[in-house]
Length: 72
Image (cartoon, rainbow, N blue to C red; front, top):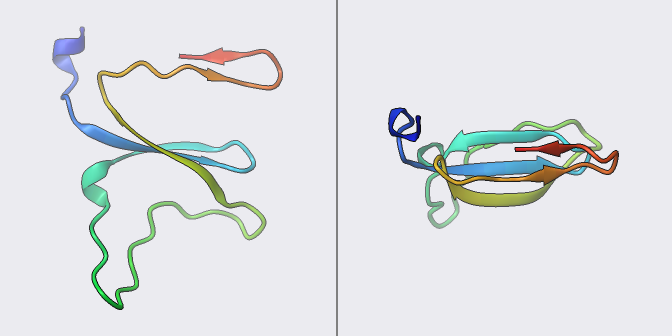
């Protein structure tokens, strides 16, 4: 099953209110001097990105909620 998934690096963004987004690492680029950068994730005005993880598409990530749920 894992042979069908392309092995690439991904960025996992978690916001303060609990939204999670996985995006390809190639969508990000190095910012040069005086650059504006690129928007990786749009958030609401009161929300902000609290955690950013780099992982592989073959990695297992366990996410525990405060309500006792586990996402694999």
